[in-house]
Length: 64
Length: 127
Image (cartoon, each protein chain N blue to C red):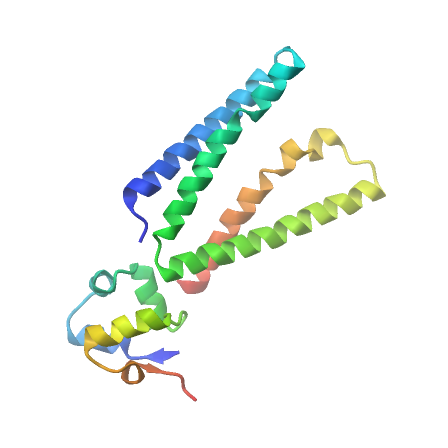
């Protein structure tokens, strides 16, 4: 699933490790989401949205 | 992310199991009464159980992607194990398989090897 995670992370000058710490996941998880190899679960998607103060739809795009 | 103390305990338990297994194999090379030999053969069991329990605890602390990777590794391992034993079963019907090469003590090691192979495959998928 396409997402803007990398852009949002860059806006805050966070590394993948920084974002992983904020979300309490591994750096591998952040990387896999950014490279669109893994779609986060709903609870994780909500945590991401809350962290960046955006809606899930503003961050993730199903492409439909 | 798995807690380091839990992972450390799982590693210690793994080493204890391998040591107990190697010790049992060595002791079984010596002559002893059948009852003692059964006890020696069962010696690694509690160590394996402890390692398995700690591994399960460790996996429970992983994040969602890491847990998915372990799940996919288990699925790959199970599939390969079924393939191995099905093939050995058929070969056993077809030809005389040597128990010196294909008994339980030789084939069980493939199961954890398949799991580690599955972990490598699953990790590559999400890297």
